Length: 233
Image (cartoon, rainbow, N blue to C red; front, side, top):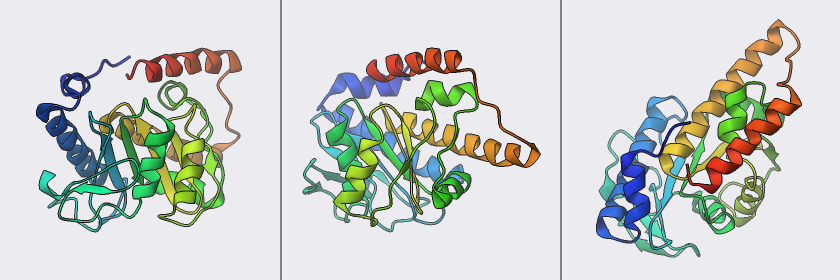
């Protein structure tokens, strides 16, 4: 399994120090730009956040192109949603991000994306089956579908967060996908794994029946997922 990168370890160890804050801000910005580069969003859609050492949250701003976004565009809010820093307004999906952090103290990064194949499953409200082993290792198992709630509401945030107790990804009905991780980079990796799996399942179903991974193997890898999540890996 991959070990935490140096920058991620620094963010954890630094807590609320200035250097730790800067590492987290940079990781949020880097994940946001990678989100666009990997084709997981278009335009200014989607959003990224990271938990700071003092418990507040750094979020991408609303309606700023990823290509030109800088760390100075990022915003900081407390877990109640009060904006503490930033000249721009935070993402319109602020409530979704904060609900995930309130519900899951071990989470350090949240990403909301509109990846094409994952969103296809979200629009027909079908879970993405964990038919390849890495999905269980990095996501925890099948990717569930959260019930539809209006975009930007507290209700949507609560509905999404409740599906993430034992998963690192959830589909948002008729909307897209939310992934979590120990850092924004880990949340981005989970998004990539889910999108790739959605594409594989979509294509495989055209060829025939999709066969599940043996239950015993799933159970073993689910244990690996839980260990990694508890250890912040």
